[in-house]
Length: 380
Image 1 (cartoon, rainbow, N blue to C red):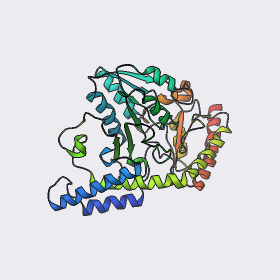
Image 2: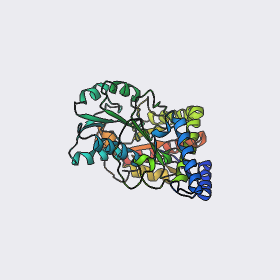
Image 3: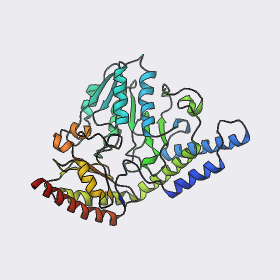
Image 4: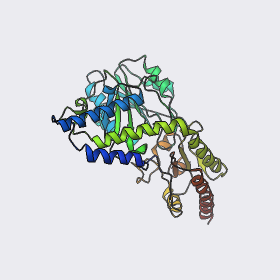
């Protein structure tokens, strides 16, 4: 099997699963319990929080452990909106956000908030000028993803953060689920107030994740019923999941430092083949993340191509796994200005550090075969 759907989820690393199993067996206690066993669990939780903070170069009290990207995004966006709505009800995001962000803003619109959805150019980039012109006196939140999950386009987060410094009443949230471990981003220099990531995108376990909340930022909690995570995310902590997540976080940051060139080389090899065929349209911009390639074969349903690759035991996808069963055109590709034929036929290859050059050679040979087969289908 050649697995090329790593933006949907990744295979957990053995070291991560081993960490989860050991904590589950040896520290199954509730970290909030006041007995000595609970105290050991609490100490392990504190250690994991401190380690995560050290890796991200932030403070331990700025770490909020969650169940993943969707919860973190909703907590950041709705938490800001509900906590600060007396000061303003205008929010800003983009037209190409992940469903967990885009639909959170749509839900807030139904509650009376005004949302500006920034447009993007053909490559998927947001204009800094458009961002600044969208800011109003009652704007309280800007939420922009770092790396797009479908095309891999990278937004200029540090430049945006620098711009937003002129508007101290506006909070800045960044969804970095796809960027973590592939495209570096300093939380200090980027002036980010809220930042989200997910464990199962970095070879961790599903149901684990993290929200960075800058000191002084207040959120309205989505859940109530306990004081865990400083009352922002109550509920008994998933101690084994948290420890395993921090393990995955440490390992992916090491991989990023040592092997990102490996990702870039594999991506470039795929793009070279795609560009060699006039019938195939490359949707991924040149300056995109090193692990995502998106291309379209106009007039061909993407599920047909995916099935053809599946017959060769190769697995890729269309758009976000959260909306992949919706067979309409991609909202992201449509926002980039592509027509329905192209926007409804996008295919996404997403790599991980675990993929090998040999696997990509096999995929490229199969891609050539699939392209020729699809051409034949269209001619007939």
